[in-house]
Amino acid sequence: MAQPKVKKIPQRQCTGCGESKPKRELIRVVRSPEGEISIDFTGKKSGRGAYLCPSEKCLKKALKTKKLSRSLECEIPEDIYDALAEEIAFTERMEASDD
Image 1: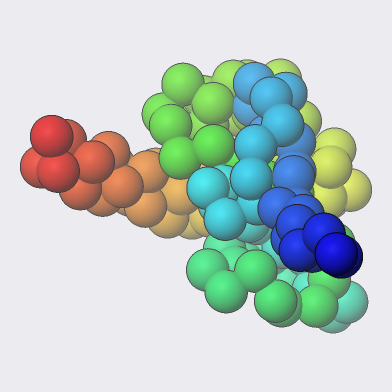
Image 2: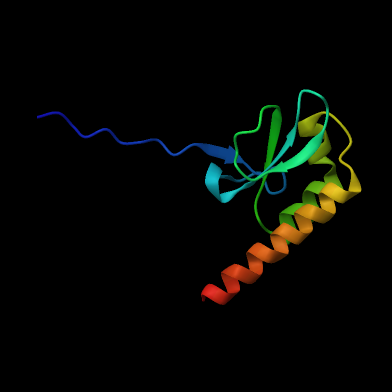
């Protein structure tokens, strides 16, 4: 009898802490072919992507070490960092209310 197919869960590395986690658990920041930086909530936008854990600690580490800028090969505008901080704060509040 044939074994049932086991679906692989795509893993990505957080640019902050360096841990590999399932892609769906991470926040994707993308640089489009036109050079525009945005947060990709769908995970399907075209362009170069970098991933971050939804934690303030990882965001601060990525900002301090400029790993996000290096991953996307360009400077990240301050408003993107602000939007990431808001998204992470929202995610942390949602997780806290689930407990």
